[in-house]
Image (cartoon, rainbow, N blue to C red):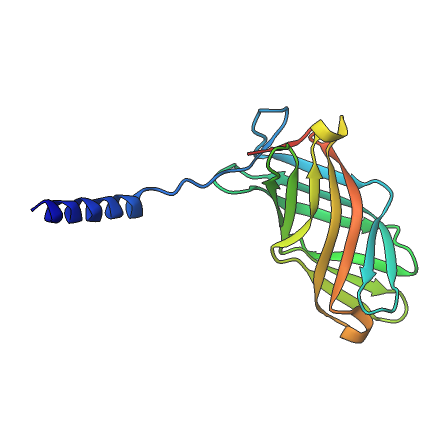
Length: 200
């Protein structure tokens, strides 16, 4: 009898554990510190240049001014999210131009013990075109780690998007010319909001 009761208790405990709601940790963008920043604008512009490189070994380097604009969504479970409304490139070097084909979105994931966050990008597609030759390379993010949001706590002022990313090539000219991916580096200073934190 005692054994039967123990089996029933064990089975009941297993059912409870299987049906217990899973609580996912959430990451929240805050501005000012401690105040949720949602349904609100995001704007950042390069400090210096955004730099694009091919991975073909040909040594293609494109430096551009760049501005990203978007808006944070309502916070929920999981990472903080922002949809991109505009990603522009201007004054590019070496007879190249860069155009955004699809804007995509960003996710911010808190780095434990800090108010910084890793940043991933999904659905952002760009094409780099060489003037006069018609050669072009298309790259697109898909849950791609693109760098770090360095919070206002760390910078002492405006937050920065510190970009260091490898973006897969999805089209354009041959892989020999464009490589299998492009690299994107640079620092974007966040002007809106004036302070920004990534809290868990």
